[in-house]
Every structure is written in structure tokens, then in C-alpha cells.
Length: 270
Image (cartoon, rainbow, N blue to C red; front, side, top):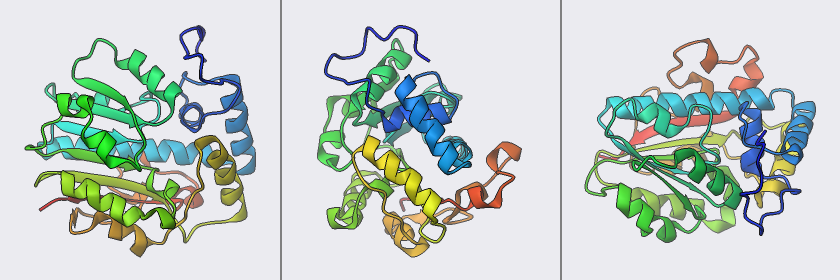
């Protein structure tokens, strides 16, 4: 819990839960408020493995970023980053000291927290923007200050594309991002799996959608794989998120149902 809340922008109603802060709570982070913890607890009551799912998604982030740095990637764009706590991108990536990271989120409180967390690190930036407006992100001063589009970039869209409904043309949106990336770049996606949806999962995501300002669209494997376009999926391809190159017990849940909640994959631009 954050002890001093006086810095929060006056325009932000902290009595309303934020999806980013609920996610932080589920990860065991400290950047959340009572209203967020209450929603997180309700989510756990309705779907007991929601905390495990959040942690498995963060574990996939760590593995994907580590893989990209091993391939020589030194700059990352994390869209829908939420609050960059609990094994965030820059902590993982900056094992290579020259790595640069830009976090993007539309939640003003998540952005405010992020700015405090990374204050003083000139290799990390935070931008308030909506993933559905790629031009506002790609042309922003913060992105262009830190990222060189002549060199490979690691783009992270984790638990994000399922917030984009079919009528908003998610395929066209992803194509725009793919086109902006230079050759040798990587794209990581995790997405709620349409083949593993039950009433409990729908009830929880419906609650989360009210906090996040949208509805979750569940998709099957082929639909999600299409988001990678002509990018070459690295082994083991698009799989359930616990199956993507696990390295230890923390990457896999004891409950098989949790391991199947989402698909995940990493693709490379030729």
C-alpha cells in the first residue's frame, strides 16, 4: 500500500478501482489502494487462480525480455505496462547496462506511479497513451528520445490485445506496430485463450473490464497467431503461457487450469 497519496493528480478518482493497480495487487506489489485490493480479493474469490495467472504472465514477461536481450536487443517498448513493479522490464533488461525502456499505459495513476518508480533513470521513460492510437505512441517525444527505429526493438503486448474488440480491427492495429519495427525486432504477445473460457473466468474479466474501460475478447490460437503477421515465431511457437520456455517452478502453476488460461509467443521480424 502507498502511504502518501497526496501526489495523485486531483483529476483521478481513487475511489474507483484501476485495472493496472488491481494487477499490481495480484502480483504482490505495493502500488495499489483499498478499492483495488477489494476488487482483487473479489476476483480471487470468483476465480481462485487469478493471482497465479497474473504471476505466470509476469513470469512470461521476464523470460521473453531475457530471451530478447540474449539475442542482442537493447531497447524495449512495453505497451499496456501497468505499474512497472515486481520484476518489471527495465529490471530484467538492464542486466545489459545499455538497455533502454519506454513504458506506455493509458491509466493516469499507473503512469504517475511509473514516473516515480523510474525517476532519475534516464534510460527509462513513461508515456500516457492508448495502444489503439499507435501514431500517438510511435511519434511521441519520449519514444523517439529513447528508442532508435534503425535498431531492433522488443515490443511487448502482454494481456493487452484481448482488450481490443474485433470491430476495432486489432489485426490492422498490430500490422501498424509491426510495420514500424525494424528488421531483427521482436514482438511478444500474451492473450486470453478462447478455448479455456468458463463462467468464472468471464465473471472476473467482466469486472476487470469495468475498471479497464473495455471488454475482454477471447480468441482461439489461430486468431492470436495471426497477430504476428509475417514475423517468425521462435520456438516453441505460440503455446499456453506456462509452456513458453519455462525455467523453473515459478514459471508453471501446480494447477493445470491456470497454465491454460492464456496463449503466449514471441516472433522475430525478418
